[in-house]
Length: 294
Image 1 (cartoon, rainbow, N blue to C red):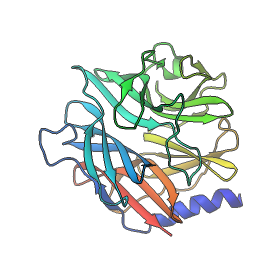
Image 2 (image 1 turned 60 degrees about the vertical axis):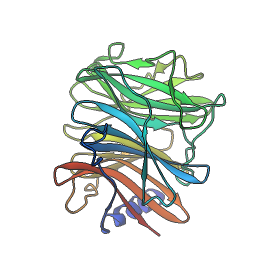
Image 3 (image 1 turned 90 degrees about the vertical axis):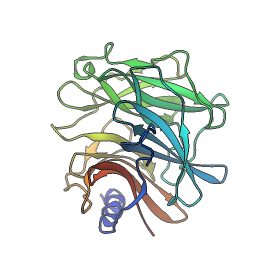
Image 4 (image 1 turned 60 degrees about the horizontal axis):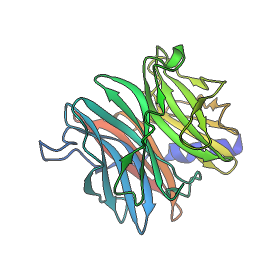
């Protein structure tokens, strides 16, 4: 357990520090992200950092982008694209290098790839892909949706959300949360991003009631894969050697003073520092917070 405990303990030590708000809802009451910002996803690209996030205006969820040179001060870039009436997009995840110290997007077929959850009305019922030549101009994939709740098994046919896309061993691994009672972690596989097959071992992890909040984060560190997820009170962890068999660490969750429902964690190593981003509620609004430490 030495390697497992080392990373988890390092994350736990961050909770003793004071989280800093690095991105808040817009002051413009008409902006797409005027009520909440959530689901942070950070990449380094061409000398700057990019923050992909979900914005909410009280009616519709949309995907937005911000940029930074120091990970602390962020400038809004704007919407990824506009939506038809009644559609919602959330929880963007980009295909990236797998290791903790490589928060860099991967090119495949000469393009960058993003997966996100989509809803019609109140039900998050499908996962879709989009692609970009430059991380700025995005186009939805012609073969969307790539997964739907309707075509799923009983444990997932009430909704799909919170996708994570990984490339490993010449396969694309798409993790997602299926809901129908207990929220559960599922997996679909593809060789070409076009045709997806659900894994025979689904669901891989079933979360007890009120255990899951936001989007899980999956990353590789040394010889292990890590899954960090919110449980409504704090952050919990599990690890795996093969991405299929997960062992949950039965510790108390990591919590943060003064913050409610921390979730959708995203962490990485940069210049020897461990950076942890997450979304949480403070004083009635949802913000994106950051903690970092040597």
